[in-house]
Length: 175
Image 1 (tube, rainbow, N blue to C red):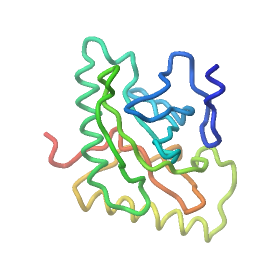
Image 2 (image 1 turned 90 degrees about the horizontal axis):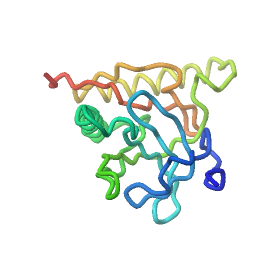
Image 3 (image 1 turned 120 degrees about the vertical axis):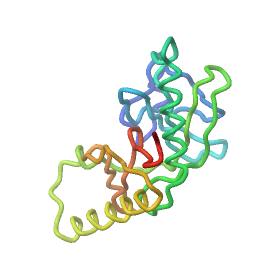
Image 4 (image 1 turned 90 degrees about the vertical axis):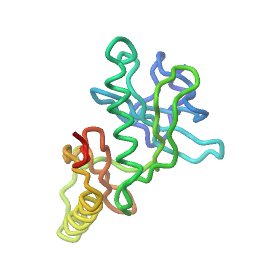
């Protein structure tokens, strides 16, 4: 059943408890899951692949307002970033069925640095360093600190390395 939704680029198929759609986007597979949320490979109405992030269902109960507030802060921060090496936010909203907030970004296809399993040659290492520094500079330019730069948050796409996941980023303006 959920295996029917598997699409190349997803790390795993949808689980039986996963919804088929969120905010009008058709879910095709899972890209990753953290302590706060899950990221799905999804398709828009034109069939374009996107990444869709939402909070985990277990955070809907008491105290769920904290996760929603934190996630809305992530959406706000990610929407302000202008870098060629971070995925652009394409849309965000609240799901009609669950009420959960969601964020849609460009889908960056490729393995993360943690999973790539290859040694990078000097030209690729220079490109990796350059792209990360440009992405970090763009964040710092608008007063955002990423706070979670690690190999699994660096995607090696055909277009070059990208820095992803602002889940625990912090604006220097946040109290």
